[in-house]
Amino acid sequence: MDRALRATSGGVLLLVFLIAILPSDIHWFWKAFIVFMAINQIQSAFTGWCPVVSLYRKLGIKECTC
Image (cartoon, rainbow, N blue to C red):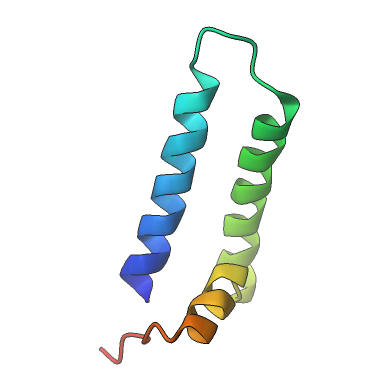
């Protein structure tokens, strides 16, 4: 699950970054979305809870028992 979570986070951040550097004017939604992701990552560092982890559990992705 750790790898899936990191891949999801990195992939979405990369996608939003690529949208942000397009020469056209960026929609406010993408700016708000990247701020939301950053705040979510900070809160999960303190609380240990991430909404994506809950989704992955429901999808049956196994957690690492290392």
